[in-house]
Length: 231
Image (cartoon, rainbow, N blue to C red; front, side, top):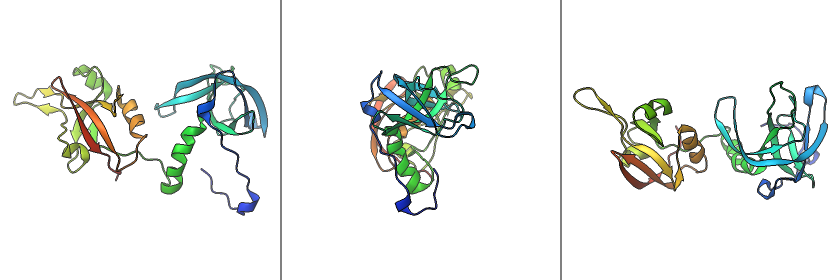
């Protein structure tokens, strides 16, 4: 986000469209500064919807728009427009072994921006509500027998997970380690790994109550948990 020191009357915001109304084959236009060439316009179509790409931090970005409009280094952050000139996405990445456009570009849907921008404006950063748990890395969880879901390493006292009776990993008298609770769903949406858990939590606000489904000792239980604001 940028703060611009200019009179409000001098600024004309772009009209926001609805990325949910896009379909494959719809015409789109990309504007950016590829290779330092200011205000370059390229055109194409929506090639696919609901794609997943990896961010630089290796987090999965879901529901991404794929387009064949030429997107090159310098296009990132520029608008992806529909034929009515409405913003439907923000150009984000290309798929290319050489680093130049290969006809496969990706944009974050504008409906995602509509959800997260108010949080950025209000709080200055994007945060997700918390359960008050530390999760076991997916690799170790699978080695310990957690085929699906996210295993808990520990539970923080005074937070929702602790108050609900959730447990992290346990150790017996002989020093053998056992899994505690494994989160497998939130409001019925499956949790397959740590990345999916974070993505699901981002849908909710602190104070909301969700139905958390866990598995412990091969027994499944579902309980209401009120999400907490992060420290």
